[in-house]
Length: 485
RNA sequence: GGCGCCGUAGCCAAGUGGUAAGGCCGCAGACUGCAAAUCUGCUAUUCAUCGGUUCGAUUCCGAUCGGCGCCUCCA
Image 1 (cartoon, chains in turn purple, brown):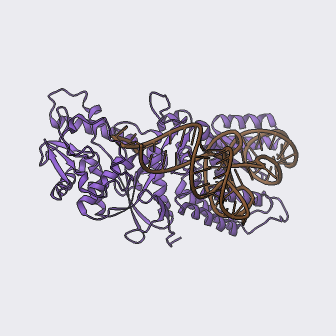
Image 2 (cartoon, rainbow, N blue to C red):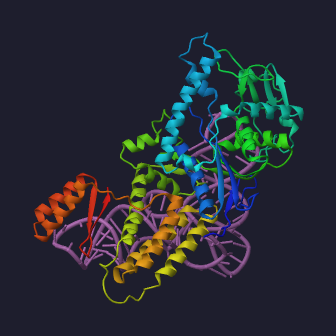
Image 3 (cartoon, helix red, strand yellow):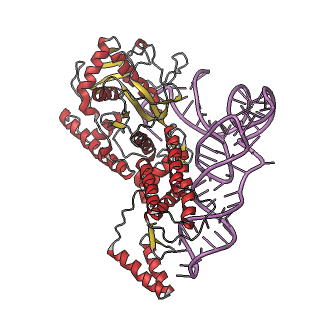
């Protein structure tokens, strides 16, 4: 597995699936747009972060080193709105910053907890920069743009001159003629040269935290942070930049304008965008009552990892309609793989005797599955097809193991494949079976009752364990397997 | 007005110019003290509709119907 597998991804820039060839061989620089931390993430947000995690893990599994940067947006209109309402009118700038930080710290923490719960540990990120830590870099970038005639100041705010960049619109594939310009123009952006121009730096308003700048006190516009942080961390070129589909325009388009306007060269090779999640056929909204956070799913008794599987069993570029029935189905599907894993971890001495006409070399089956799995993943992360390869192997080897027990070596080979795929999907790890002494004692008691053919007692213990969330399965060889409900 | 996506069995879903992967649910049988797990079998002559191209289309082209997204903050 040391050689690099080529991976192809749909590129929003060209609207085609194209092979990814990293700038530095074997190393992928990946910048993904992170959360704006003013509230809990909802499951739609999480779909995007799960897609990005899968993207990263696919490259890692394919042998690449991935340097992954995800920004935390900790200064923005809604953050300011929510963090400043308790403050007195005469609060100092210092106090305003503190209030903003208190809010963003809290929700950043909650965000990391949610990520960890769905199998995305923060250790997996090489960089997790906060926007507020990069104000000097943003100012300097804006100055560069101004020096190149791409930015202009109006009353303490600075705007990007879209007319100065001929290829503006290349990502969203918008031409300026066809654009129906928005009617809701922000009142304080009345002074722009063109309605398409966007703000790089916003002059401060009363009641807002601000930073000093060459244009007076203010705060950064939304798009500038990603350009500034990405180029500070990765330099003027980047392999992959990803985010939710809704960020294509204007956010990513404007990022391109800022970065390429400043450097004069192509910035990002591959733009990758994940589709939306719908709930009950509609976009999530609080008024429709279909707005869920991960915490809501947990309260309804679902494991966050089940949610992860439900998301990743669908293709990332397809609209996905979330439902609780779908979650239940995901749980059942995951159980099938997990049960199979436990079976492979065991010795298989309960298998039947004799030959089987369909018997194939399990080694060959695993190799075939591995090939199919990677072929699917390498083709624009075709997860439904990749999972199909796993399920086909599960069925084939279950059937074979029923008749001719796989050897220890063959089982280990299968387990290695399950580890390899689990490194991407995070759904079927080694069981951490630390049964409490109590549960273990109950299983022993039931064994004794069964040996004595005391079925009533045996069933009572099995039901008791079931009520504790432990489901038993008696195997042919007399051993007892179990899983969590 | 401009740009774009989608419509495959009860549900989710892959896919290809050559005759429909996989998962969930369901049914029948085997195994089991009974279950669970597993196994065996069954479950789309058909891929929204109508035309066209083709020896042949679910796959290409056109039209129609239906669902949706972006062009404004948004994962």
